[in-house]
Image (tube, rainbow, N blue to C red; front, side):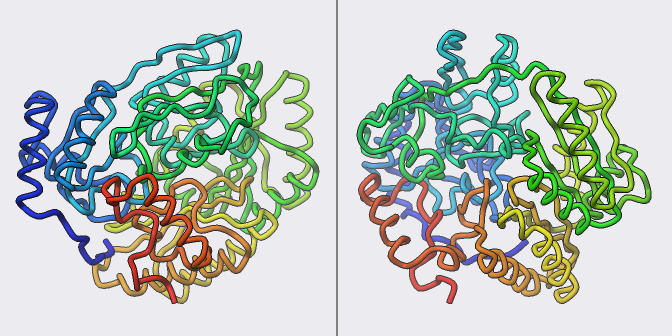
Length: 475
C-alpha cells in the first residue's frame, strides 16, 4: 500500500462537542462512537489507508442527515457522506476524521412511473435491486458499474458512475433529471425537473452529480428510464495479443457499430478469469467481451458485422453465448475481475484512465513499457469502447512503493499526452488529487475551489478530496 501523509484532524474538544450534539439530536440507536463500531466505516475499495471516524450516523431519513450536518457545522468537524463503500478513489474515506453519515438505511424506491419513464429513489437503494425492479416493469436503467450487486445509487450519483453499458447508453449523469439534497448549513435544495427536457437556470443537477460528496448530501433522485431492449446477444472475440484486440475495437467503431458493451481483457486479466473457473481457449492472450441489444433481427445483423471486423483484425475465434445462463457466467467473471486481481498480489492499485479510442493500442504499448521498466506486474481490462481501461498495478514487495509511484506518474503523463483524462468513472478522491494539475490549469482548479467554498465555506463536507494539497501539486 502506498503511504500518504496524514491529513489534519479536529481537536479532541471539537470531537467531544460533535458527539454530544449527535447524541442529543439522534440518540444512541443512530449514532456509533466506539472505535470498533466506527472501524467498519473507515475505508473503501481504494488504496487510501483507512481512517477510523470519530462518529458514525446511521441515517434513515433526510432529517437524520440534517441533524448530523447541524452537529458538524456547530462543532466545526468534517462530515463525510457514505453509500456502500465500493468506491475506488478514497471518496468515502474520512481522511480528516469527524463524522461519517451512511445513507444505506434510506433505501426506498418511491416511484416507478411507466408512462413517464421516471423513477424516484432514495440514495441507499442498491443498484442491482433497482435494475431488477425497473426491469420487472419492462423498463431499463442503463448505468451498470461492475459493483452493481452492492453499490448504492447515492454513491453512483456522487461519482457519476459508468460501467460496461456506457459505450452505448452513457453514464449516470445522463439519467439524473433532478435531485433533493442538503447543504452543509442545512439548506434544502430541489434541483432539476421531472420532464425529459428543461433548461431553466444553471444546471445545478449536473454539477452535483460527480461532485464526490464535496458539495451536498443527496436525499432523493429522480431518474430517467428507457424501454427495456427486447433482445440481447453476447459475443467473445479471442485474440493472441491485447494489441490485436485493441485494433479490433477501432475496426468495430470505424464500421459504425455501437454495441452496448465492448470490454477488453488482456493476458493478465484472462489469467484471473481462468482462475475463477471460466474456461477460455488457452491460445488466447486477450479477449473482447461484446454485447449488442435491440430487436432480434438487428442483433443478428450486428453480431455478423462485429464478427467480420474481429476476424479481419486476426481474431483466433469469435464465439456467441448460446443462452442467458452462459451470458451471465461470462459477465459474472468480468464483474469479479476486481476482487480476483486483488487476490493475485499483496498490494493492488486499479486506475481508470481514458484515452481517445484510436489511441488504445498506444496506451496498451505504454503499459507494457511501464511494467518492464518498473518491474511492477501490470494487467488491464475495461471499457474499450470508451477508451477507458482499468490499469492494475500488482506487487508483493512492501518496498516497491517508489517504483509504483514512478509507474503511476508515467501512466498519467502518457494518458494526458494522448489527450486523455485521469479518471473515467472512479473519480479523483484522494488517490488522484495530486495529479489533477497534469490535466487541469491552475485557473480551472481555482474556479472549482471557489465553487466548493460557495457550497461549503468552512470546508467541512468531505474535505481533502479532489484538489491537490496546497504546494503539493505535480510539477
